Length: 102
Image (tube, rainbow, N blue to C red; front, side, top):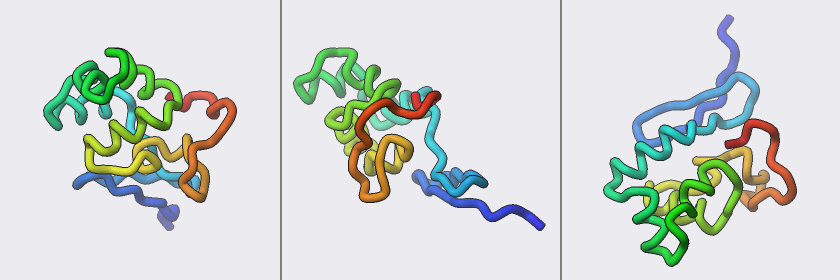
């Protein structure tokens, strides 16, 4: 019998895991989606008053304000893009992220 799979929708794609956690897109996929949505990461950062590297940093380390900018640009919610960075109430987790949460 096939294992139960938790499914997370992103656009027309389905991402799922067998451990009950939503899957997280790889940062290279996010970079591509940002670009396909019409901006470079630096342009998106500057447009919102941040340094050129703000979006790049948020793809590798938690930065809730910039995660919101990226999510809005992609028409998603931050907890959909980075499920491990948010708690069950959809609030940013505090403290160190789990290893490998880039």
